[in-house]
Image (tube, rainbow, N blue to C red; front, side, top):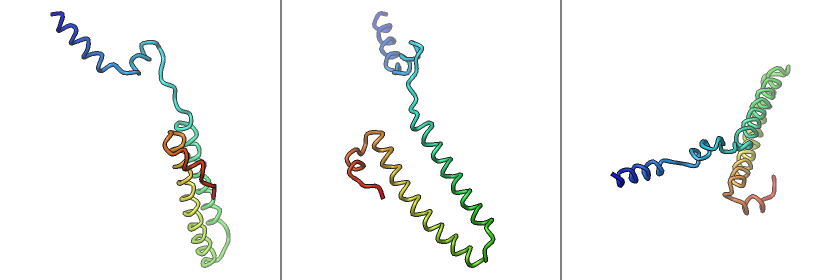
Length: 110
């Protein structure tokens, strides 16, 4: 009978996590403002900038071939900038999470 009670108590402790302890104390884990606020805000800003640039290009009164050439050049530039930004963001997140400290610190911005 005592063994069963002890075994049941140990089983319930195995499923007891840090969130349960914090909840019992009326606390919760601290939210990470970088991942929950800053990163989505930057993504929304970048998306808005792209939509605005596309609208400006399409609403500009230009001849068809000139507009197509500028759109093609703009798309190439945007692709290159997005690639560079994605690499920088990847390194920044890795540094923030503690994964790749020396690589980012020694690289120079492009």
